[in-house]
Structures are given as structure tokens and as C-alpha cells.
Image 1 (cartoon, rainbow, N blue to C red):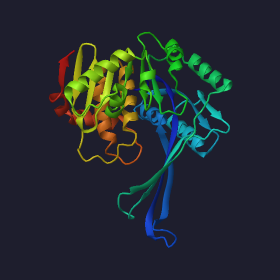
Image 2: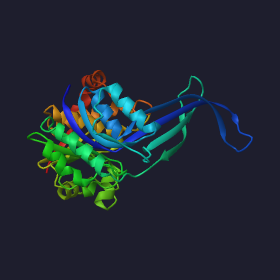
Image 3: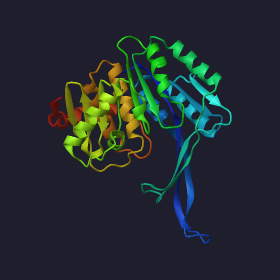
Image 4: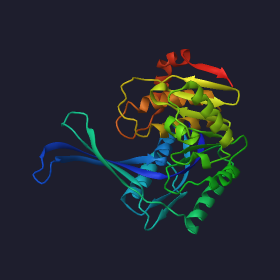
Amino acid sequence: MTGQPVVMAVDLVADRFITGTPKRISREAPVLILKQESDRFVPGGGANAVANIAALGGQPLPIGVVGDDESGRAILAAFDDLGVTVHGIAILDGYRTPTKVRVLGGGKHAIKQQIVRYDIEDSVILDDPSSRLHAQALGSWAGQARIAVLSDYGYGAVMPALIEPIRATLAESSCVLCDSRYRLGDFVGIDGATPNEEETEALYGEPLNDDPARFAAAGAAIRKHLATDFLLVTRGSLGMTLFEEDRTSHIPTHGSDQVADVTGAGDTVIGTFALALAADSTPLEAALLANFAGGVVVQKLGTATIHPDELDAAVTAGSHVLEKLEWESS
């Protein structure tokens, strides 16, 4: 997967973690007072998908938008540290970069627990200069990549209208993947998608109630509606299910049942899945690698990435996943 390029249209989000140790209960209100220890920004949302591809040695080619603010500058600095090109990222005056701020507290040598989270949110309406910048970036990458990712967190930078312009820049045997938090059903014409089970249920329009027959019907209906080649549904402790035209594969979860933090796990999944496809994996092979990657990052605290040695170790230790793999003809 090293060096494989992946075009990425993403909602860029900053994840901010403020940590501290408890001092006392406030006299002003029944709330805990923390003595701050650290304050750090990491790429979140679609930016985390970009960071995961970079951490695995791939070459993400992102287009997106940040504001001229602290969070936007933190994302650009993080990308620069990762060696990710930023010439397709527009900086908009007056736009607040979406930021998820988590306040965590705990003893000095204890694992910090999340106390509260607040979100700084804004929706972007792309102006002409931003659209031209994106078009120029896509034009400069024409023919370099076969795989593209759309990571839509609902902030306006990722639209269904991007599917065809992005596809036009890809090399032959192209594949456009989508992960959309709220409106996957609008991205008709993509080649693959990676919804979680809750998003699958919402798009299907009926409760699944852990019913295998309903789940199978939902997967088939969504794949037909989107006109996709495959649909990879992440199911938490139940692993993943890959729906393809000729078969459905059930992949058991990898890793410990003691999950530390699921923050950003879906970004790791689509990043690994896309990069594996770029390296000529089959969808099932890519799904297996994404499953291993997801099992690693949920053992880490906060928004995390996976590195090649960690993925290699997970694959080496994960033969039980292959032994328990189940599939059925469609």
C-alpha cells in the first residue's frame, strides 16, 4: 500500500482534547474544577481518514475547506507533518473550522475520562475561488489515482455533485467510495460505501432488530438504490458484513472485547479499505484489512491512526478471523 495515491473529498474537522486533573468541587456550581495538563489538536472527521491513509504509507490527495482560525491552522500543520499535500484545501475567511472539543479528567497517572464535549460547527457554501481551487487540484492529479474517497460529515464541503468530476480525474478501473453521516442515499452512482449499522437502518427506513433476514434485505436494497458494486457495513462487536453482487461475507470482529474508544474508527476503516483497494486488493481482502485496522484503533484513546507495523501484527495474530469468516451466495 506504500505510496498508493487516493483522491479524497472530505469535511475537514479538528478534534481538540483538553485534559486535566481534578482539584475540587467549585463553590460557584456543583461542577468539578480541573487543573489543565494538556491541550492538543488532531485531525478529525474526514481529516482523520486522510491522516490514516498517510500513516499507513499511502499518498492522500485531499480537497476540502478550513477556516482562517486556530483549528484550521492545526489541521494544515498536522497534514504538513504527515507529508500530505494541502494545495487542494481552501482557506475561507469567516468560516469556523468544525471542531469537536472534548474535556477529559482523571488522576495524574490514571486514564482520563471524558467529562463533557462541545462542538464548534459551521456549514460551508463554497465560493467560486474555492471551487476553482478544487478543480485545479483535481486537474493536477488527473490519472494519478484509481481510488477516491468522499467523507461527508454534513458540513457542506462534500456533495453528490462531486462524484462525476472526481471520477473524471481517476485512472482506468476507478472506484469511488463514500462514507456519509447523514445522507448516503443521495450519493447514487458511487462504487462502494461503508455505513455503520445505525446508518444502514436509517437509510433502509425500518428497524433491523438484529434480524439476519432484515439485515440481508437492507443490504441488498441499499446496494441496489446506490447502484454500488459493494457495501461494507460496520457492526461494532458483530464485526463487518460485505455485500457484493454474488455473495455476502460476514467478518467477525478482531481484537479485544474491551474497547477503549471508538472515536474515529470509521475513518480508519474507510482509509484502510480505500488504500487496500488502491493496492489491488479484492473488496473482501480490503474489508478484512479494514476490520483488522478498526480492531486496533478502538484500543487506543482518542482519535487515532494505525501504522503498518500495527496492521502487520494484527494480521499475523488474527488467523481466527479467517477461520470464522462466513459467506453466502446472493
